[in-house]
Length: 154
Image 1 (cartoon, rainbow, N blue to C red):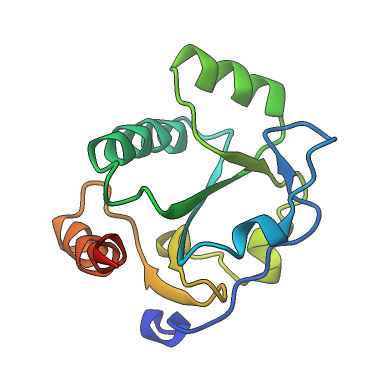
Image 2: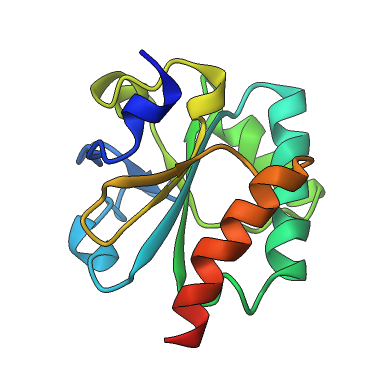
């Protein structure tokens, strides 16, 4: 499947996602419906390079706070050891809105196996608008800026 074929596809948030590792905080999809855009990043919580990228996301979001102020941020983490992941991100001071996916259901039900599909911007109907990460990619930074700056002006 070509990348451009994914634009406009709907993304499903499985009910099995757990917010911040707490079993009492099951993901409430309704909480996401009141924003124009959603940034969805999903990653392997057992991968050192992936955790480094989360640190880069933290910096990028802080540096672009105004641009992302009305964007719902969703970081979906798949891991075989969530306590180790939590320890690692706490030591690195990476505080982002995490949702745990212990069964990798998010990736499977949305057919997002390809590495370039690990970062998405969705509209308020959960349809894909952007595929790709602005981290270390100036062309993607421009695409994010063009789309999200429109929302800031509204």
